[in-house]
Length: 238
Image (tube, rainbow, N blue to C red):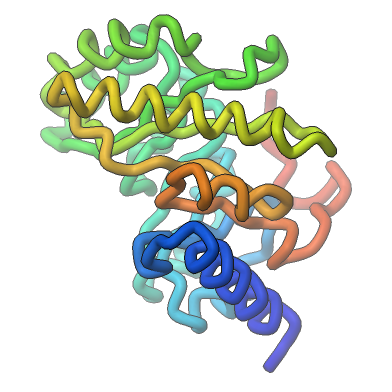
């Protein structure tokens, strides 16, 4: 067993323990591999363990890695901030966009999908930490926003996504996840099908599982620290 396989086994063990502690079925929790800057051969190694979800942040990386990954069964989610000028490229390579955070973006995705006669799964990104440095819809606007984009028939709303506060104080992070869960319940009550909650990463996945996460996004704890910015996969024009 190599290091990546070992790390995945450890993450699965953490997921199982956290699920048991929260009296949840561990099979309800999906592991998504956050593969920003990760070389294709390392992603293939991770996929060989049976994990099928990967998450990318950059359009250029999606394109660069596509050929080497296309023959291995997996699903790709876009988990980074999506610029409107990258929509056409991104939808070629992904099954789901987890970072829809404005009506302008949603409408432009809809327009492009109409041209290509396609549909796509999406998550609504919520800024539950209220930090200006983070993307996402304000929680107070989440219901109105979800109702407005539900009219866009090429977008299949599947869930909510958030990035919790990075803090040594676990309760600060927990509040972010609790808020996302509360919003999910409110939206479900209005018949908006946000069945999935994408929240929790390497450092806080246990808290996320306790608070209802169904997708955990893990990169560092599996692939190690990210390369320096001069890595090949960082060479996308800003």
